Length: 384
Image (cartoon, rainbow, N blue to C red; front, side):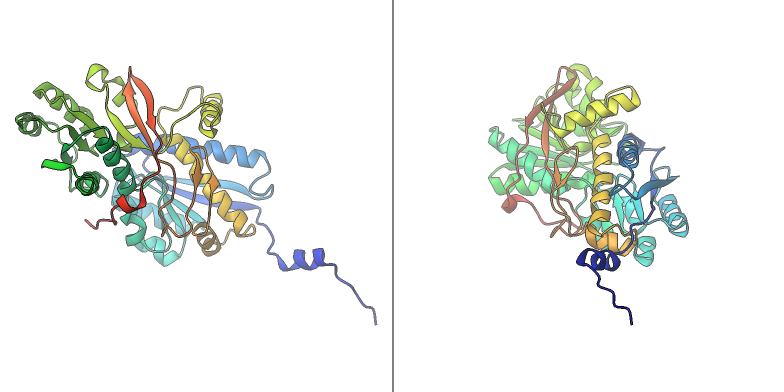
């Protein structure tokens, strides 16, 4: 009888699952419609990361990434349809639009198929809570951003504030988190106004705020295009002189083209390219690929999304099985992205990642700070 002695290296190799040749990622994103301002640049960043990974031989030097793309036209119903089409196509991961509402429309599809889904830039902390174990976010949470901006406003000496929010979407209720934190710090909310998504006339809201005597030190909103430019113009035209505080939804070329009206606006977002940072390198690589610098942070966040998926596949020993990727993703710590380190372990689907405070200055970005939010100030997720 012949006897064979297996070395430990051979045993390990036999026990480990074989690395797949291809990882297929399905994207159900808004390439047209109201969310395209975020999802189009996010997809550009994703494709830059994929090109870099594939040029190096794939994930782990072995597994190439392929995309199956669907345009959901910023529509929740179309998002659900596209997600099902991607499931039927056999993808291992699904990328959903940059807002919680259309992403949540795909809950049933994602949960039934047990395929991990990650939104491009949706920041509502309720997304993974409502979406379940297979739903992930890819952006600092609304409650975290609000904790950072409220603490900054208070530290700047602002004692009173007015919030403007819309109940139409999860994201546009971020000012309610700001209110909670600002009041906890000792600030006073003088009033609240609500608007509808797509509202064109903000004169009534602006007149109400301007009539306060004294006016609030801060006006905080999470309105985004096209609402935010209209709101800001109305506020300044009515004579509102206080500090305007916004959120990542206004990190767009429009905000920086408003001239004197936009000067001094401060907002939270996911990163700022300091000298020698990974984000500075990303911006250079992006410009080489596309011929122009990124117009917003969303491109870098898209790049980070692919780096997270890459890290999950590596942690899953090269498996492209959706459940294995999901389990590995939920346990990731300190994944190096273009915007900084990203952690999912112990976060219930919401990433721990850096928040940057940016000021609009001379039509460009000025870094105000990159503070770590105080854990005791971060409000619990608010169900709408």
